[in-house]
Length: 112
Length: 112
Image 1: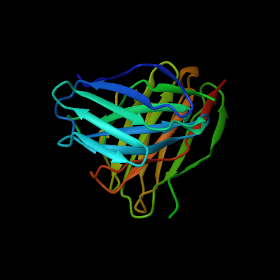
Image 2 (image 1 turned 90 degrees about the vertical axis):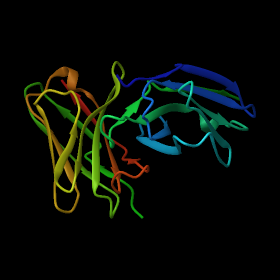
Image 3 (image 1 turned 180 degrees about the vertical axis):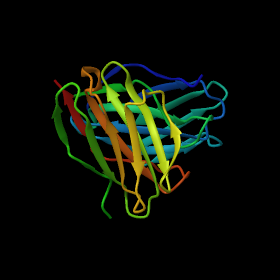
């Protein structure tokens, strides 16, 4: 079935780069997403990548997609304390588009 | 441009009661999806509506239902509330099957 896995926790120092990893099982995924959730808030769409792309860069964010290994990563350059949040990886499942399959979320802690 | 609006933001209900949550999508968006977020199960897909029709449904009991109106606003209803229904309910809006899916701030439901 469709499944998305993420590591649960990452701690970095302010100014360092953060890399959050995600693996997925659905080889028919069309889009893959990264969302950010701050305490008490909804989900903020950070970026997404189409499945035929290898990389996408958007300011401090770089998304890498290895479709062969079904591995997605999000790199945040020059991580700031304001980046502390939970980051969710998600895919559009193949069985029915419109339904997002989410990972468990990675809590990013940024230490000053 | 206004974002996705969910009302109310917080609700406290008693077991056995029913509840209705509302979601107004971004202007021009015709697809609305609902998700339940709990610490134990993470983010799970409830259902998706497009042009007043339910297009997709997740694996939830029949106590969970929804509908969409001609102006694309959507409501979800949970009847005979159980303690386990306590969760953050998130709504996402999109144009149609395009990649961009934007979430509201959510409704925090507490069942006591």
